[in-house]
Image (cartoon, rainbow, N blue to C red; front, side):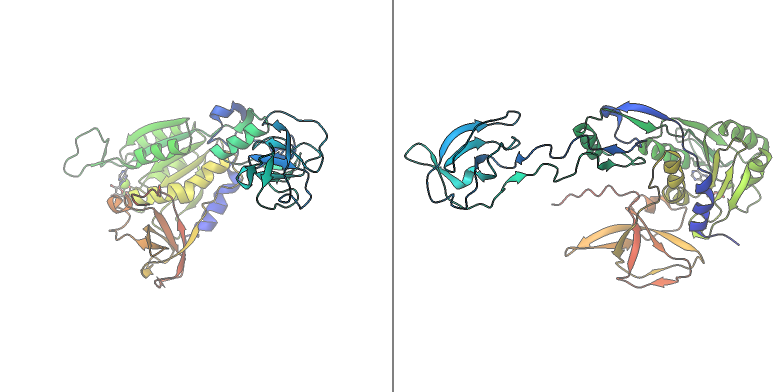
Length: 408
Ligand code: AMP
Ligand code: MG
């Protein structure tokens, strides 16, 4: 009996170990996984901050009734000290510290010059208007970015703001990629007759690069020959992960699981109730490395890099959240699942009349990489569900889409 997709992930994730930690500077932080909790070194904002260009006043509620004397100006980065009467104000610019005794900022748009030399205000404001209060975003010591966060450019902004210019991040695991199949040639070779070009390895190498893995070893192609497969597997087992494609199904030449076993790889699972990707294999090498054997069908490789391998790679890289995150969206048309397992169906997102729907892409199956190349991602038809009606909310995984558009 094949186990479920969720059981498959749950049986491999516990043996995934993280690597050591090293330090990177801000320029190299995006795309890395933070290995410490980052807290606020000051209150944020660190002082009562003017949120508008205008005038700081001592609030009375009668600001529009008489002219004000302008007794000074405070710019960002400077301070102002002094006493002020109710009819005094200072010019203040966005980002400047609002000095006592002032407690409201009136934007310049609500002011006009007074013939007597001062200013008049044309609109009322509330006490503490246009002041970002000290600590209103977070208090000193609060958690800003948790350890295990995959850092994006916006996190780099936060790190910069709290003086974390060099941070510990997890080292990524090393990954080996091997294609098996006697029909395979490399893209730069001429393919004729029964031969086809190896696309899986180059997809995997590109996907690994896109995720920020740099210690990647490409082992090339091996034919369906025991000795040659075993010898390449041995090379690959030096890495923390070995990703193979092809040869894990039930055909006569599907000898990869046997070859892995001959190399001491302990089988964790073989066959998952999922389509595409049913024959998927996972094991652990004698050195504690993770070995994933994907079926050769290109769509299975593309789908399971994201749905099965990526969570493992991310966990090994120290991320706290590593499971693919679905978006719940309605189906454009009904969809069927005759597989007897969970089905990941390739789809595009289509927006009409302000509603985004998931539109299945007609496909000839898991060998049809051309159709998959048009997809934004996959949606899930749960195990045991044969048909989902149009409009049904499905779990859509945006694993390929870049979500750019020609129109505004
Ligand atoms: P297999 O899992 O070895 O039975 O292969 C399933 C299908 O995927 C067959 O049609 C293979 O020719 C094809 N295939 C296997 N490996 C690759 C590869 N590296 N690139 C493209 N197609 C492949
Ligand atoms: Mg094969």
